[in-house]
Length: 321
Image 1 (cartoon, rainbow, N blue to C red):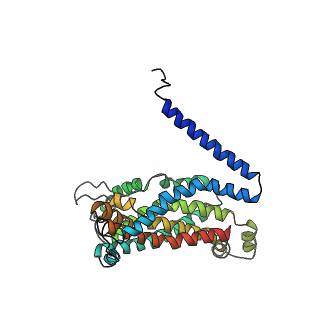
Image 2: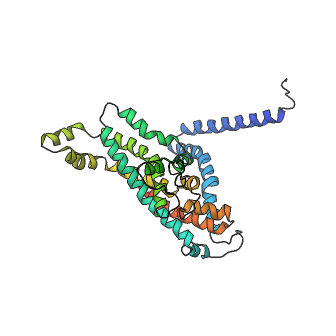
């Protein structure tokens, strides 16, 4: 089909206008860079302007809108004050979601960081370090939904006497036990969901910690061994203090990611059987039950829980940098 210049003229005009605007901005920036510190600051602001504009439109304004909606009713029209926040701390389901979120935020970072540290210490100075870390990092290639589906099959249940398709129940039956519905019994089902999250995050912790352990000066560990320190003492008194900043960064990153946990819960239980978390409850209230105000209040609470961790992480990075 031949190219019709007349028909495409409006599009070509828009393209030319965009190119001209881009060229004008670049010219202004280059001109400012050659005109002293004040002009350079103006150029820096000009370069930052698009990013600041996008952040304002995509983050600041929606955040303020969510804060305003948290004080309104289910339709988002009538002002109800602190009713949504009162509901959040009195409703049994909301309290279960808050409890589960706090359990996730404590157990997932500690478990994944501890396992990653042990694994990193075992392979940090070995010849097969790259292969070993790649194997542990492989689960991170899956999305959280994919990881949830994998572990849902691991916990799959069939009645006694039927062929078990779940790996865990197959092992239980092989040792003479009765199959169980692992994702139904509360509060243990929350721990089984946490296992799936730890499985995906341990590789991240191991890679960062292995790099930190590899950066510990060999002279320190050799001097400690010459002084008669055992491998355990070297690890506790030399390695751990040396990698403390990295440990803190890993713990904070895991905690921030865990507070926003949603996909695994949605894929494995759908928030049923007392396994809901704040992010899942927020989605249910806002989009499933049509309670816009309650969903916004849960979003604000989640934001307030994440902000101190983000601020602490930024302060730690600035200090270590």
